Length: 280
Image (tube, rainbow, N blue to C red):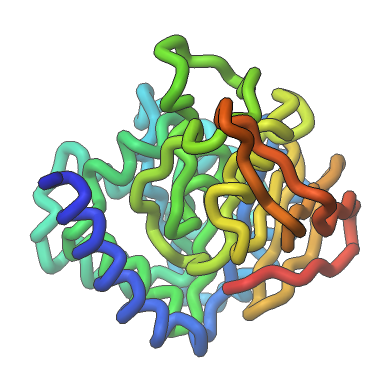
Protein backbone atom coordinates (compact mmCIF):
# COMPACT_ATOMS: atom_id res chain seq x y z
CA UNK A 1 0.00 0.00 0.00
CA UNK A 2 2.84 2.38 0.88
CA UNK A 3 4.57 1.60 -2.45
CA UNK A 4 1.35 2.31 -4.35
CA UNK A 5 0.86 5.58 -2.46
CA UNK A 6 4.40 6.73 -3.31
CA UNK A 7 3.93 5.70 -6.95
CA UNK A 8 0.75 7.80 -7.15
CA UNK A 9 2.59 10.78 -5.70
CA UNK A 10 5.29 10.34 -8.33
CA UNK A 11 2.71 10.21 -11.11
CA UNK A 12 1.22 13.48 -9.89
CA UNK A 13 4.65 15.13 -9.97
CA UNK A 14 5.33 13.61 -13.38
CA UNK A 15 2.09 14.95 -14.80
CA UNK A 16 2.98 18.43 -13.55
CA UNK A 17 6.46 18.30 -15.03
CA UNK A 18 5.25 16.95 -18.34
CA UNK A 19 2.59 19.62 -18.67
CA UNK A 20 5.64 21.82 -19.10
CA UNK A 21 7.58 19.10 -20.95
CA UNK A 22 5.14 19.00 -23.87
CA UNK A 23 6.59 22.32 -24.97
CA UNK A 24 10.16 21.24 -24.22
CA UNK A 25 12.72 22.66 -26.60
CA UNK A 26 15.09 19.72 -26.29
CA UNK A 27 15.52 16.36 -27.98
CA UNK A 28 15.82 12.77 -26.88
CA UNK A 29 18.40 10.45 -28.42
CA UNK A 30 17.37 6.96 -27.34
CA UNK A 31 19.68 4.04 -28.21
CA UNK A 32 18.60 0.41 -27.98
CA UNK A 33 21.91 -0.79 -26.56
CA UNK A 34 24.72 -2.82 -28.06
CA UNK A 35 27.50 -1.38 -30.18
CA UNK A 36 27.54 2.40 -30.62
CA UNK A 37 29.07 3.17 -33.98
CA UNK A 38 31.02 6.37 -34.47
CA UNK A 39 28.41 7.36 -37.07
CA UNK A 40 25.61 6.99 -34.52
CA UNK A 41 27.53 8.97 -31.90
CA UNK A 42 28.27 11.67 -34.46
CA UNK A 43 24.55 11.92 -35.17
CA UNK A 44 23.93 12.30 -31.45
CA UNK A 45 26.44 15.15 -31.26
CA UNK A 46 24.84 16.79 -34.29
CA UNK A 47 21.41 16.48 -32.66
CA UNK A 48 22.72 18.30 -29.57
CA UNK A 49 23.98 21.22 -31.72
CA UNK A 50 26.87 21.86 -29.37
CA UNK A 51 28.43 25.32 -29.37
CA UNK A 52 31.94 26.26 -28.30
CA UNK A 53 31.18 26.66 -24.58
CA UNK A 54 28.68 23.81 -24.29
CA UNK A 55 29.60 20.72 -22.27
CA UNK A 56 28.53 17.11 -21.91
CA UNK A 57 27.64 15.33 -18.66
CA UNK A 58 27.52 11.55 -18.36
CA UNK A 59 25.30 9.95 -15.70
CA UNK A 60 26.75 6.45 -15.04
CA UNK A 61 24.54 5.34 -12.13
CA UNK A 62 22.87 2.44 -13.98
CA UNK A 63 26.21 0.74 -14.59
CA UNK A 64 27.88 -1.85 -12.38
CA UNK A 65 31.21 -0.43 -13.55
CA UNK A 66 30.45 3.29 -13.86
CA UNK A 67 34.04 4.48 -14.25
CA UNK A 68 34.77 1.92 -16.97
CA UNK A 69 31.56 2.82 -18.79
CA UNK A 70 32.36 6.51 -18.60
CA UNK A 71 35.90 5.95 -19.81
CA UNK A 72 34.79 3.95 -22.84
CA UNK A 73 32.12 6.48 -23.84
CA UNK A 74 34.27 9.55 -23.29
CA UNK A 75 37.13 8.07 -25.32
CA UNK A 76 34.78 7.46 -28.24
CA UNK A 77 33.16 10.89 -28.06
CA UNK A 78 36.45 12.75 -27.79
CA UNK A 79 37.60 11.20 -31.05
CA UNK A 80 34.63 12.97 -32.62
CA UNK A 81 34.60 16.14 -30.50
CA UNK A 82 37.45 17.01 -28.09
CA UNK A 83 35.37 19.10 -25.69
CA UNK A 84 35.25 18.38 -21.94
CA UNK A 85 33.03 15.53 -20.78
CA UNK A 86 32.12 15.34 -17.11
CA UNK A 87 31.31 12.23 -15.08
CA UNK A 88 28.57 12.94 -12.51
CA UNK A 89 28.12 9.76 -10.48
CA UNK A 90 25.35 10.70 -8.06
CA UNK A 91 25.47 7.22 -6.57
CA UNK A 92 28.62 8.40 -4.81
CA UNK A 93 27.82 12.10 -4.52
CA UNK A 94 25.19 14.13 -2.69
CA UNK A 95 22.11 14.45 -4.93
CA UNK A 96 21.34 17.74 -3.17
CA UNK A 97 24.63 19.36 -4.17
CA UNK A 98 23.32 22.50 -5.88
CA UNK A 99 26.57 23.16 -7.72
CA UNK A 100 26.35 19.75 -9.37
CA UNK A 101 22.63 19.90 -10.12
CA UNK A 102 22.92 23.41 -11.55
CA UNK A 103 25.75 22.17 -13.80
CA UNK A 104 23.56 19.24 -14.84
CA UNK A 105 20.67 21.53 -15.71
CA UNK A 106 23.03 23.61 -17.82
CA UNK A 107 24.53 20.73 -19.80
CA UNK A 108 23.74 20.78 -23.50
CA UNK A 109 24.04 17.00 -23.77
CA UNK A 110 23.26 14.57 -20.94
CA UNK A 111 24.07 10.90 -21.55
CA UNK A 112 22.72 8.06 -19.36
CA UNK A 113 24.79 4.89 -19.44
CA UNK A 114 23.35 1.37 -19.66
CA UNK A 115 23.16 -1.22 -16.91
CA UNK A 116 20.16 -1.57 -14.60
CA UNK A 117 17.40 1.01 -15.03
CA UNK A 118 16.09 0.43 -11.52
CA UNK A 119 19.54 1.13 -10.10
CA UNK A 120 19.53 4.49 -11.89
CA UNK A 121 16.04 5.48 -10.76
CA UNK A 122 16.74 4.46 -7.16
CA UNK A 123 19.39 7.19 -7.12
CA UNK A 124 17.50 9.85 -9.09
CA UNK A 125 13.78 9.59 -8.31
CA UNK A 126 12.32 12.42 -6.19
CA UNK A 127 15.64 14.28 -6.06
CA UNK A 128 16.99 17.54 -7.51
CA UNK A 129 18.82 15.39 -10.10
CA UNK A 130 15.49 14.34 -11.60
CA UNK A 131 14.36 17.97 -11.69
CA UNK A 132 17.64 19.14 -13.25
CA UNK A 133 17.36 16.64 -16.11
CA UNK A 134 13.82 17.85 -16.87
CA UNK A 135 14.96 21.46 -16.69
CA UNK A 136 17.76 20.81 -19.16
CA UNK A 137 15.33 19.10 -21.55
CA UNK A 138 12.78 21.89 -21.29
CA UNK A 139 15.51 24.47 -22.00
CA UNK A 140 16.73 22.81 -25.20
CA UNK A 141 19.26 20.16 -24.21
CA UNK A 142 19.51 16.68 -25.69
CA UNK A 143 18.96 13.83 -23.24
CA UNK A 144 20.53 10.63 -24.52
CA UNK A 145 20.72 7.11 -23.15
CA UNK A 146 21.47 3.54 -24.13
CA UNK A 147 19.94 0.26 -22.93
CA UNK A 148 18.90 1.01 -19.33
CA UNK A 149 19.41 4.66 -20.25
CA UNK A 150 16.73 4.15 -22.91
CA UNK A 151 14.28 2.42 -20.59
CA UNK A 152 14.36 5.29 -18.06
CA UNK A 153 13.01 7.76 -20.64
CA UNK A 154 9.44 6.49 -20.12
CA UNK A 155 7.09 7.40 -17.30
CA UNK A 156 6.06 3.75 -17.08
CA UNK A 157 9.48 2.09 -17.05
CA UNK A 158 9.75 -1.62 -17.81
CA UNK A 159 11.88 -3.21 -15.08
CA UNK A 160 12.36 -6.51 -16.90
CA UNK A 161 10.64 -8.65 -14.26
CA UNK A 162 7.66 -10.92 -14.86
CA UNK A 163 5.27 -10.63 -11.92
CA UNK A 164 3.94 -14.14 -12.49
CA UNK A 165 7.37 -15.77 -12.75
CA UNK A 166 10.02 -15.73 -10.06
CA UNK A 167 12.89 -16.43 -12.47
CA UNK A 168 14.27 -13.51 -14.51
CA UNK A 169 14.37 -14.06 -18.27
CA UNK A 170 15.70 -11.63 -20.88
CA UNK A 171 12.52 -12.23 -22.85
CA UNK A 172 9.04 -13.02 -21.60
CA UNK A 173 7.69 -16.53 -22.19
CA UNK A 174 4.08 -15.62 -21.38
CA UNK A 175 1.36 -13.30 -22.69
CA UNK A 176 -0.57 -13.11 -19.46
CA UNK A 177 -2.54 -10.31 -17.88
CA UNK A 178 -0.77 -8.37 -15.11
CA UNK A 179 2.55 -10.11 -15.72
CA UNK A 180 4.75 -7.11 -16.58
CA UNK A 181 6.26 -4.95 -13.86
CA UNK A 182 6.61 -1.19 -14.24
CA UNK A 183 8.21 1.33 -11.95
CA UNK A 184 8.54 5.11 -12.23
CA UNK A 185 11.00 6.26 -14.89
CA UNK A 186 12.15 9.75 -15.82
CA UNK A 187 8.87 10.59 -17.57
CA UNK A 188 10.59 12.44 -20.41
CA UNK A 189 8.18 10.43 -22.53
CA UNK A 190 4.81 10.67 -20.81
CA UNK A 191 2.84 8.49 -23.20
CA UNK A 192 5.37 6.22 -24.88
CA UNK A 193 6.94 3.09 -23.41
CA UNK A 194 10.46 2.20 -24.57
CA UNK A 195 11.98 -1.29 -24.73
CA UNK A 196 15.58 -1.93 -25.73
CA UNK A 197 17.81 -4.68 -27.22
CA UNK A 198 14.56 -5.44 -28.95
CA UNK A 199 15.24 -7.75 -31.90
CA UNK A 200 18.48 -9.09 -30.46
CA UNK A 201 16.66 -10.39 -27.37
CA UNK A 202 13.30 -11.11 -29.02
CA UNK A 203 11.27 -8.94 -26.65
CA UNK A 204 7.95 -8.99 -28.52
CA UNK A 205 6.09 -10.71 -25.68
CA UNK A 206 7.37 -8.13 -23.23
CA UNK A 207 6.31 -5.12 -25.30
CA UNK A 208 2.94 -6.65 -26.19
CA UNK A 209 2.41 -7.13 -22.45
CA UNK A 210 3.24 -3.45 -21.93
CA UNK A 211 0.76 -2.45 -24.63
CA UNK A 212 -1.96 -4.58 -23.03
CA UNK A 213 -1.25 -2.97 -19.66
CA UNK A 214 -1.40 0.55 -21.16
CA UNK A 215 -3.43 0.28 -24.39
CA UNK A 216 -3.72 4.07 -24.74
CA UNK A 217 0.06 4.47 -24.99
CA UNK A 218 2.52 3.89 -27.84
CA UNK A 219 5.08 1.12 -27.32
CA UNK A 220 8.43 1.32 -29.14
CA UNK A 221 11.07 -1.41 -29.28
CA UNK A 222 14.54 -0.25 -30.32
CA UNK A 223 17.10 -2.78 -31.51
CA UNK A 224 20.81 -2.67 -30.71
CA UNK A 225 23.06 -0.22 -32.57
CA UNK A 226 19.91 1.76 -33.38
CA UNK A 227 18.28 4.89 -31.98
CA UNK A 228 15.24 7.09 -32.21
CA UNK A 229 15.67 10.86 -32.18
CA UNK A 230 12.62 12.44 -30.58
CA UNK A 231 11.41 15.94 -31.37
CA UNK A 232 7.91 16.56 -30.00
CA UNK A 233 5.55 13.84 -31.22
CA UNK A 234 7.84 12.56 -33.98
CA UNK A 235 10.78 10.18 -33.76
CA UNK A 236 13.35 9.64 -36.51
CA UNK A 237 15.13 6.30 -36.73
CA UNK A 238 18.95 6.25 -36.91
CA UNK A 239 21.49 3.47 -36.92
CA UNK A 240 22.01 -0.02 -38.28
CA UNK A 241 18.92 -2.06 -37.40
CA UNK A 242 15.19 -1.58 -36.86
CA UNK A 243 12.58 -0.07 -34.57
CA UNK A 244 9.22 -1.68 -33.83
CA UNK A 245 6.08 0.29 -33.00
CA UNK A 246 2.90 -1.11 -31.38
CA UNK A 247 -0.23 0.93 -30.66
CA UNK A 248 -4.04 0.89 -30.41
CA UNK A 249 -5.00 -2.71 -29.66
CA UNK A 250 -8.61 -3.47 -30.61
CA UNK A 251 -10.99 -5.57 -28.52
CA UNK A 252 -8.40 -6.15 -25.81
CA UNK A 253 -9.55 -8.89 -23.44
CA UNK A 254 -8.29 -11.52 -21.05
CA UNK A 255 -9.57 -15.06 -20.68
CA UNK A 256 -10.69 -16.59 -17.40
CA UNK A 257 -7.19 -18.11 -17.25
CA UNK A 258 -5.64 -14.65 -17.54
CA UNK A 259 -4.43 -15.03 -21.11
CA UNK A 260 -4.23 -11.83 -23.14
CA UNK A 261 -5.87 -11.42 -26.50
CA UNK A 262 -6.88 -8.67 -28.91
CA UNK A 263 -8.20 -8.61 -32.46
CA UNK A 264 -5.58 -6.36 -34.04
CA UNK A 265 -3.22 -3.47 -33.34
CA UNK A 266 -1.01 -1.03 -35.19
CA UNK A 267 2.31 -2.72 -35.96
CA UNK A 268 5.20 -1.19 -37.88
CA UNK A 269 8.84 -1.94 -38.57
CA UNK A 270 11.06 1.05 -39.32
CA UNK A 271 14.63 1.63 -40.44
CA UNK A 272 17.10 4.49 -40.67
CA UNK A 273 15.55 7.75 -41.82
CA UNK A 274 11.95 6.71 -41.17
CA UNK A 275 9.82 9.07 -39.06
CA UNK A 276 7.30 7.52 -36.70
CA UNK A 277 4.50 8.92 -34.58
CA UNK A 278 4.90 8.73 -30.84
CA UNK A 279 3.15 10.33 -27.89
CA UNK A 280 5.50 12.65 -25.94
